[in-house]
Length: 269
Image (cartoon, rainbow, N blue to C red; front, side, top):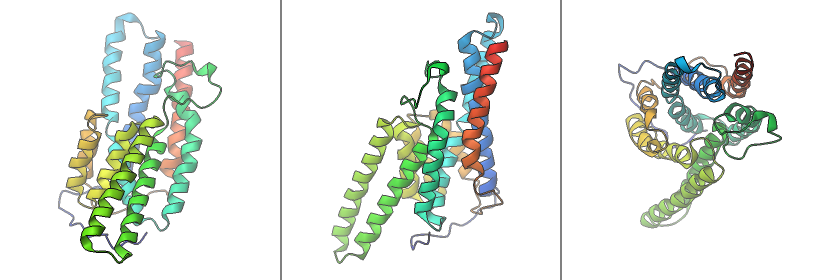
């Protein structure tokens, strides 16, 4: 996507991480988080872990979940970064939407223990929570709408003051609807996750501001996510070598694998 609002951000000496490195950090910390949420939580909940060592494993669970807080801010950042650099935003949204659908069943199975549901009784989608790709898709839809509105008003023959007022009002409506839908459909991180993406878009490309205000938007839902925002300050603006569909396929696959591991361990322990 070519856009006249893109700006060059000066790369500082300490910014050594390219996009591929950041995405690997996000995926690794996501797996660590889900090892706790999917595998260890089920073992703790089912009583598979002996009472004598339960406190130790509970501490390990808490540690895994804390490390996992790093991932989501990085994924939010790359939704915004991807929006400004993709050749076709509609294909970008379609890709996210397809994998959001593919990921929903593995996600429902993986989080069934967290939500107090017996996976053996699941007959369809669980509406108690939707996977993180739904959150990312809602954020992408919203920033596409906000950007489209800005362009249309910029091209319209209206005064600068009127344009600013209409843009602000339109952005507020689009943002409020997107956040409301995120909360209503119980997307992962809820409306706060969508709001984080919108705030990052409004602050783009100033990474320090994106990190600061993005963390402020997400704080109530995930106060432990600060590490993920700090990693954004180390980004050097380069894409790096990365398979195009790696994250998309990795997300549902790792959820399915971890769910299988959790069931097998719960059965044999």
